[in-house]
Length: 118
Image (cartoon, rainbow, N blue to C red; front, top):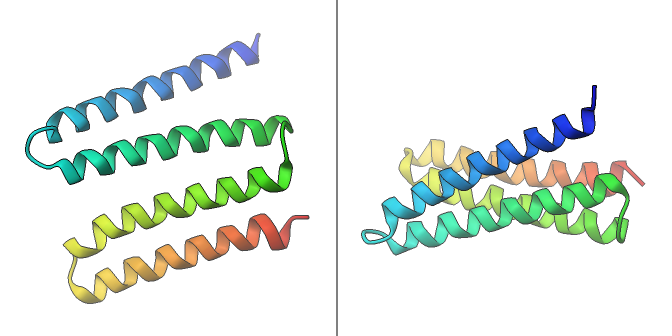
């Protein structure tokens, strides 16, 4: 069995689902809410770039330390973007907890990528 082909098809299917979801969200917010359209576009771009960098990182291409920093920065950006959209919809105590968990997740990612691993 050719696992390389299966992985490629699974990745292609995931990318197609992500792109369809992006297109639908962009279509729904095109006239009513330009802030939502900008959020969706930024999130899609960040996820696409993150997937590209993770693939490079897994293959061992490019500068390892630079790729780690870029992966952490993009992941932290996505965490902050989604936390900033979710927290205002909740009561103040729960919103604070969302921000706290987002900060802890970004900190744990930094610890795992830069301090724990060489």
